[in-house]
Length: 324
Image (cartoon, rainbow, N blue to C red; front, top):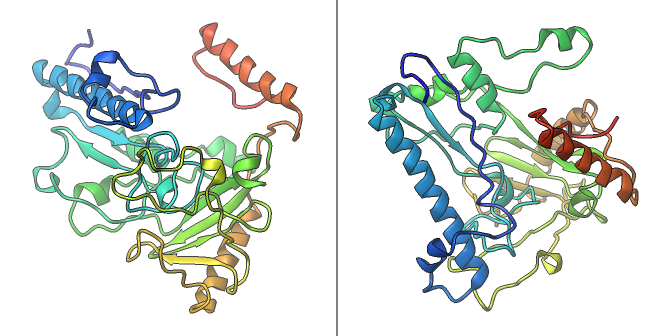
């Protein structure tokens, strides 16, 4: 119903490629050749999403709006191992700071994209939250929160990537990317304080395990045809390698040349390891950690979720993340 004479902005966050694994039966039947139910459902979910996105594109074209539209597709995390996903050739998956958990598919499309950039790619560093400054820049809006800055809060960690995406030879303005985690890692994600779990300083990446014994979750690789009936069915039993705080037991990778994180450089390049460790320690000093409740305080944790859900159902259109 939107008139093509006025600009518009739509944010669509479909839950289809997410648990629980549910999809219309007709979509499932298209993947009946698969004998592993979780993989069959997951592929059917992605296929359903692909068709719905195609429907939006067709509508834009039919209404003569496509040529002036910028379409952004971006995932929030890697596929969940044990739930039908496959991140090959990357290591790890959702709930992990290995590349399989944090390197995700993203692209821009639509008639707004310059012709000479269509079908190309950009290898610069970018975070999902950089879309904020990128879209603000396109709308000619200042993305910085100056009131918050005057109150002592840091400026928004977001960069405008449109110059890099829309031209040739323009580098990404993002020089580093801090990887977050929670104290206790995957096992403490409901209650743990926010901590720095690593840092990417192209082309290198430092990983800091935050579970007991400096372990990092999901340090495994999927085969090209996984998952199948011979694959693991639960992530709880998967390997958690040590990613400690010294070159002897640390984790350092060249993720531009070794995207699968097969070759640990920590021991062979201790100076670089210690440099990135110092950068991560400096970032830790200003980490913001919301109140998630205390470990074992299930009542408070559930109260946070139920309060937010109630607000949404009552039409407030937003959900506060945590109780004060």
